[in-house]
Image 1: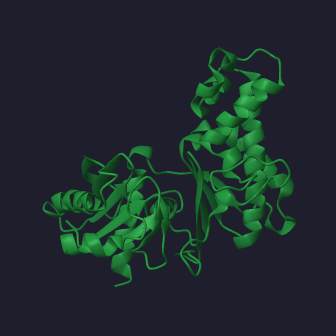
Image 2: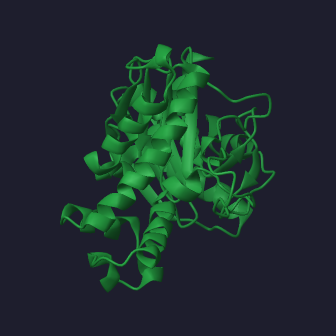
Length: 315
């Protein structure tokens, strides 16, 4: 049986899966990530991929990782949490495994995975938004991921949506979308709302510095008005930004992935309302707002494996 091997490389673990053309994960392997040793990272990726390759016909390996990958889909220009900035990952892993290897950042890999296996299957124009610790994105136009001349295109989480008194972002600027609409942004909003308002809230029983987006969701489900307002605030900001993104590429759909997207109507309703209120008239009603169909537990491996299928197609 022909499979593609997908490898998800994180700061704490390296997970690999053998995935068939229908998106079924048939086998998985996981190892701790040797985050501070570059050679050990390559050896571990090769080991987990090799274990799967010994069981299945898998001529290609897709590697998804957080960081900035170059347009050659080989080099990690700037890695996060791992010591491999500047490394030619595809060359290193390919040399150790004898397989064809392609490397992609995790948000773009998720977009390719969604197009191959998920909610965007069959679509040629869509935007993938990942709502996690930060806000990641992948833009697909005419069936092709948009990379730009240097491979860094599509950092929509770092579009500035508050130019006056915006929140400080990890990138060093102020007002980036991800400071408001990521999971950490929601927790930040919760602290601000609690400080500015006086009404009772279930969130007041949690030390402010420990509040998470999951706490806000749990409170909202229990009818907590302040928590519901936090989602309204977050969704409105995200919807306003998405209305601008629609004007850029006129996508068939915008697909939301990540823990925050699981808040359902608490986040989707204000997003849709803000899109409707702000999008240019010629685009109204044309772009679907969808939740990802990739399982959280498999999404990173699925996205990485989709890179392998793509690599076969361009051979």
